[in-house]
Length: 362
Ligand code: GTQ
Image (cartoon, rainbow, N blue to C red; front, side, top):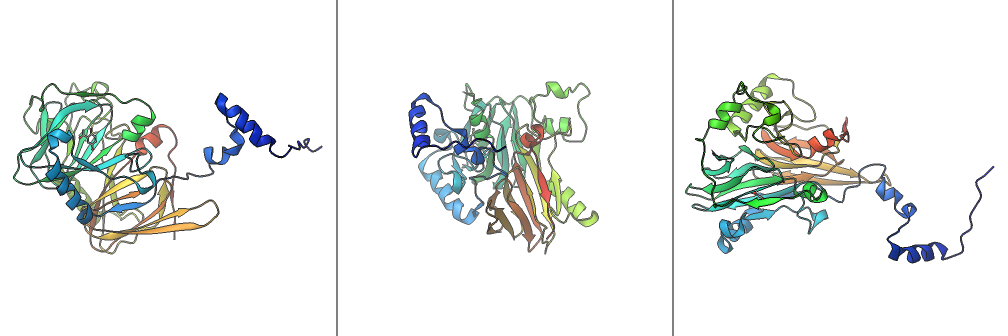
């Protein structure tokens, strides 16, 4: 027998919605499809920030505010689909930070995990928990959750880096705490290179207990120099079979555990040979790319529920940044040998059993 049919008088549904609205009640059936979508339908959209276009604004910001006054002089890479939210994807934040010669970005710490990826200039430093690390283009530096950090520039020219933080994730969880240091710059407790000697040589102190790591759930190593990463990729490009989707792609690891460098943000570096035409793939973790070397383009596709697709072509060169939202199909093309750094919220997807990825043909 068929279920009984309930004929609703015209307007009865809306009357119910209106009457219960003041009681903070709302009908699920009007939004079930958006709440439990058949596939991710991100408001985040593909976008590119060309360095040639962004740099003049960054330098202008250097004329109107000091690093000390700004605390962090950063231009946020705001996703066009998420304007006003200081977010590059639903879970991640990205920004370009400028520090001029002689400036200091004062010491603080916060629950948010941060990464720095150096874009332009050499000789600035980030200090993490009492040790400085000098920055060079392509270096990947961590400031894990709740570690004291300040930045300084004792070099002759401007230094710019990409900041990647889990600000939207921490905001979503209402778990944000922050403190300012008692002095602008933290006391130097160890000479530069001490951290790398301890954790950067595929060795670890004998007494090292990963659970009592100096950086909590994050990698105890806080600087990953470009020289080393590039050398590994170049070698693999010559020796190893090239992955048809990724070229040669490596993940930055916590040397003590083999796990992610930070609990909320995963980071990667890949090399694409000249002429590379990558196969398409999609994954639930949305990613931000920073182009280190070479030129190419990304073809990004989004399939809508009605079966239609939208396509973007983003042409990139050195120091450009682009974002690939969750479950958008990506194909990477390189005209000359290209090196791409990227970061995503993959560790969160993995830890929560939500990670899905599809490597497609075609
Ligand atoms: O360097 O600590 O881009 O706290 C945003 C928030 C950088 C930082 C940002 C921050 C920082």
